[in-house]
Amino acid sequence: MNGKEKKSRAGKSARTKGHNFERYLVNLLIELGYQAASSRAASRELDNQGVDIYTDAPFNIQAKAVEKLSPGVHDIIKAMNKSAPNKKRPNVVAWKRNNKGIVIAMDLEAFLSIALPRRSGGLTEEELGLPGSPAGGNQASE
Image (cartoon, rainbow, N blue to C red):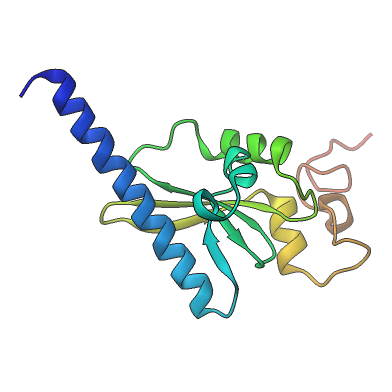
């Protein structure tokens, strides 16, 4: 087997692994009572915007079934934030590694919009006084 055939076989295996992970997430969401489908089948527009799972859950999902995430999760979410059609739906990355389990990652604003009670669109970092925010504890006193 030459290098090109080996690379083609590895690429096919990676695509299959990714598709299987997407199907797993779709089935999990359905079990939780949401409607869900792969964006590859349901919405080419969403698929092109980095949203892998088409769902009525309150967030957009990009699925990654890889050992090393490149680009990193911050860059993936940043790209999704720029291109996702519904800015009110937080973007999350579902990342699966072999024998390591699944991690769901989102930025803090997304987490706050889902986890905390809604108050005029959710609470901001500043409203909570989190470190690093203008009202947080990392500011030097004057």
